[in-house]
Length: 456
Image 1 (cartoon, rainbow, N blue to C red):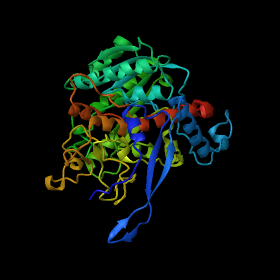
Image 2: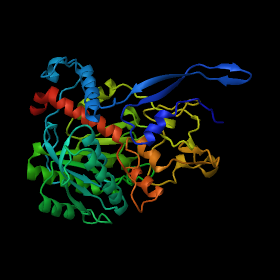
Image 3: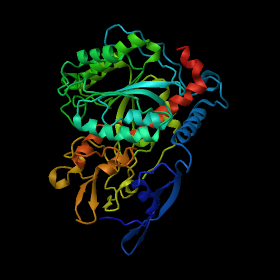
Image 4: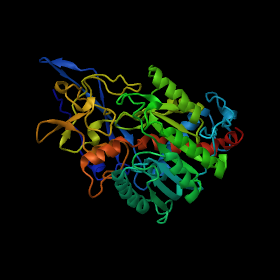
């Protein structure tokens, strides 16, 4: 049974115009104890407003201010120029840098991210350029960009995103920034290592690498063969590529951000063996759910990076205020999200049975998933929304998924791409809410704790 909630439509309409980060306030509803009248439970909804960037305020300024508040809360630092060690009671000591022992084992240790520098980005399996977009949105500068993406449809979506980025960030992202639309990984992922070696010989070593690699060997949505899955074994080539770039450009000048599905809690021996091998290659992961940072869709992922110490992430995440969302605010007016039928069992549960849904289930590249099938078809239907015209439950549209994961509306729209194509691209993308949070924290950390980074 659907519960109708009186609401302001202005916020949602603003989101659909694509200005979700300008001069808006997000409606958030809390369910309080209800009273029973005539056999019906009458629920009372209290509304509070979460501030978003004000008109004229840049995204970079907004995220920087929020990140600085988090850092100061964790460390007790009151002014700039104070090291983490002098005011911190909650941040653990950093571990010494690890020296690699194999050609695919990367050099670990945190680097200083300079907001004033212009970086040469490479996105491996970059899809619709989530890493590049998030970096620009928090104020980083990009001198050159190379997309390495075997999927032609994803490259079409990236081309559409690129046009918007060049227009939106002319001072950070030059018109001639794009080096090449490269298909170095090939359509079958075969011989990826050799192709990436040729890539570095042709273009030189980048100084910022953002990479995702196929997760079928790790994900519970796949067969979970671990690194025996040829697609997931691409991590060897990704790690080898980073290692070669470190050797060519210098270990202290190459940044990286890697993402894949989180499997730390999986007890299967093949998965645990695979995770141990991945940690041997690229270090210990940080696992989190994007809803923790404002996303409207669960996305429980592992991240590997070297611009914030992984040892500090737990304290930083705890200090981040919980951002409550309501899925209805990113849906088209024709769609209504049913009230939650059950309480979340995710590590970061935000949905409560009987209350408005705050987060959708994880988006995948396919539309035939457990959450998108009704009970009669062997699913739970938690990801379905009600179409007001047909009266039927159906999956969310691509434009709604874009907004849910922090994209601009129609970011993945391109002539020749269907809505299903765009949903598949989004299902393989990184959540931009999480990426903006990490990048903004790194930029503020450079200013506050630069000396600590340099000595580790």
